Length: 456
Ligand code: ADP
Ligand code: MG
Image (cartoon, rainbow, N blue to C red; front, side, top):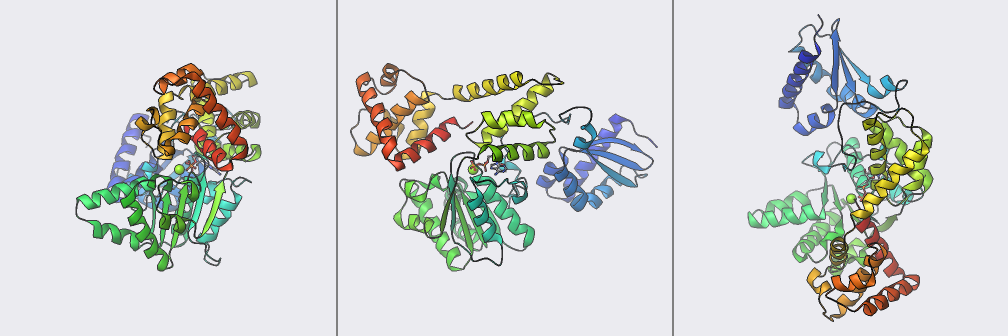
């Protein structure tokens, strides 16, 4: 019996629905959304799978469930063949023609994570490229999941935007669960932690909240810089930390800066952050960027020439999220315009447009907001002519960044900042420029702000 394409699609959709009732929804969504039925004949159902990871996962973990579900709609079904799209297209075109549409700026979303652990299978040690910029952080991460090595507790990893902190933290969680299914692991961002705490206070369920965190074997807290100024959350985190730590369980933190530079954090919490091992992740070198592009291509089923990848890796060097964005854009253009062979000039054009687009997103409002958030001061205070001591430096940094990244004139910077005289602005900008040469802390802060402002 052969089945037409239309009814095959219908059967496939029914099968997925059927599976939806048997396994947890996120699994179905993650693993099946990119699989397409191709044909059915002689008892064999052929499915296109987008990459090796999905193929491996479905074959290993879900094959029998899938076979059973599909058999209820095609009784003649005997066997399922999983065909890798990338293999099929290797000789015909450079890029997989997988049907999925994507926007090139899409971020990997934690939304597809397992709701009980908040872990997303996309982030694993095996697809994390190790280079000089992150090898220590990677080794430390492996160390804490490895049963035999001495533990550092807590592990605190910091680094700029888009450099792989979340990827590494999530990998830790996934690796632990791979080896020890019974361990209780939770990944949480500081914002989620704060929100859940507020909810539990509202709903009178603070005891449940405490219990949930205190029973963990591994607590992984991402983006701890957002605890800045949040007294209640800090207090709860402090007690949670002590509880887990005293039970000899593991804690991992990340932040966009070292603990010493997080403003408005209680000293006792800061000293907990600093009590284990603090390691940074920096920007990757060319070789590492190239390796990352290769692994991303593999995962997404793109087949691009090495020369193309090199051009991208050379041009985009600030952070990995941008690197991925650039890769996606290049692929998008090649696909949309059905380009057979692409020239170096065209790639450079695409990358130039991409960078221009990134810069266009830099507005004075964005700069002011990011700097205010970073130093944890009110935007209105930043703009007003207040002489409060704690505002003077952040305001000078705003002026400097409006000039340096915002490419604004001194006069218009003065206008944005409550009509200050342009000579004041010139003075402040020059002061920062001078200080950047000697003040390591300030230059670190400005570097962090720069990456934040340039973030997609
Ligand atoms: P951060 O949390 O530091 O802002 P992410 O972990 O979200 O950065 O990383 C941004 C993107 O770059 C993710 O898609 C991630 O998978 C990718 N990435 C970062 N570092 C690496 C690496 N070393 N190897 C592979 N992919 C990486
Ligand atoms: Mg992150």
